[in-house]
Length: 278
Image (cartoon, rainbow, N blue to C red; front, side, top):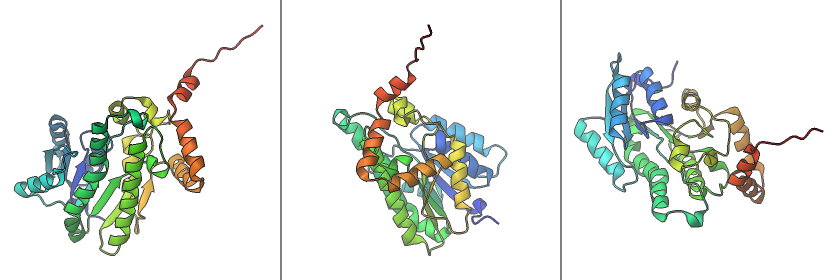
C-alpha cells in the first residue's frame, strides 16, 4: 500500500516547465495529485497544465515566477493564498549551473545561480514546511552528483548542490518523527536543458545520460519506502560514484574532478585517431 495518498496532496513543483520538473509533474498527475507548477516561462507552464488536466479530475495551478528574486517565496505563498490553494508537498527542482574558470565568470550570473540553487530552496522550504508537516506530505530537494565532490569549473554549482544535500539531510533528521517525508535527490548527467543553459556539453563531461523519467522513477520509489533515508542518488553508476567519492582523500577527489571537467581532455578524446598501415 502506498505511503502517500496522492489524491489528497497538492504538490508544488519548481522548475516545472521542462526536464525533471515536468517529469515529476506528469508522474504525480498520473497518481491523482493536484499540482502547483512554478517556473519563469508562462506559456510552457500553461501548455503542460492543459496536458495534465486532460482526462483527469485534478487541479493544476500555474505560477510564473523568477526564483532568483529575494521575494519569490513570499510571492508564491501570497499567490496561492489568493487562489485558495493549500500546498501539502514541495519539490524544489529549479536550478541552473555555470561552467568556466571562476575568475572569468560574470558575478551577476553567479549571484543569480546562488539565489536559485541555494536561497530559493531554503526560503520555499521554510515557507511551506508547516503545511507539509500538518498534511504529512513530502519535501524533495533536488541536489546533484556535483554535491559529492568539489567541481572545478563549476565551483559555485557544486558548492550550491553540496549545500542542498547537507541542508536537506539535516531537515530529514529534524522532521523524521513528524510523519512528513524529506529527502534529497541527486541526479547525475540527465538529458534536460541543463547543458543548453550552461552553454556547453562540457558541463556533463561526456557522461552517459539518464532520462528525466529515470530520475523521477528513482525518487518515487524512494518516496514509497517504509522508512526513506535522507538522500538518494539516481542510477547504479552514479550511486557507485558517490560512494567512491566519500572514500577518496579530498586532494585526490578535486584533482580527479579537475581533469574530468577539462574541455581540452574531452576535445582530445573526441579527435579521430589515425591508424597507419604499411
